[in-house]
Length: 329
Ligand SMILES: Cc1cc2nc3c(=O)[nH]c(=O)nc-3n(C[C@H](O)[C@H](O)[C@H](O)COP(=O)(O)O)c2cc1C
Image (cartoon, rainbow, N blue to C red; front, side, top):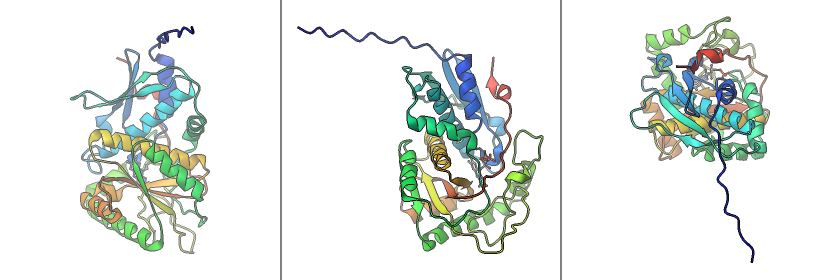
């Protein structure tokens, strides 16, 4: 008779300060609206807490905290990849209890294991991902990469629509431009962008060298004006691949999940040697967001419009040091 040994439960140590350091180093490379970096991290009883920093929410552009949750979700995905890369993957993500408004998620360690090839590839892409606002070459994005993009978003519970053909791209672009016009009517919105346009040595905000060319009425999608110089190219801009990422519903938890899906998409694109940038105007204006949802025939709300294509590498934006985002008390 063969005796089956009962599986001995594996003792898993809680996360330590060195795990927190690994997670935070990657997390802070996430994108955030106007590079506000609205996140904080804390080690509590062996768990890593990802928290939002309400003081860094943009009062005019982000009245509901949507952009903070997208950015924190992106930071959370980077933290998960870094922990997996160190052989100490998180055992899922524990959502905050009711009333814990600033806690985005808690990461608790799972059974140690080596990282998967996909985790490693995405982790390696973290320092290389940048918002590239300049023009893309007209080279199409290969079908195999499009398939990887769709899978990346699906694996984080989101949906992704690739907008194919000039009439469809034009329809999305029109919604985005009309949202941009609505937003720019508000002087406080323009002032907020100006206030976050900061040259070095600032460690947050967008430096003009990362801004891409100055916004022009001929741009296919609206460009945010972070003080870039006028475009020098004279020929028309080739159409980028336009993708719309969305979620099943619009709860705070779904927005955090959408941030994770967005970051997985951006890292997948980076790993494939492509550039990307985000266009959030049609999400920031509720009527435009609804128009976009209806145009796509989706039940759940869009959470971000993304431009994807081949381009020159953009300049990096700065980050605050890890010490200023780790809560020690
Ligand atoms: C919620 C959200 C909204 C954003 N909206 C825009 C946008 O409309 N236009 C743009 O150029 N960049 C947008 N960004 C990109 C940020 O400006 C960018 O992530 C930040 O400046 C840091 O630069 P990096 O992405 O190169 O690391 C957005 C990012 C997030 C997370």
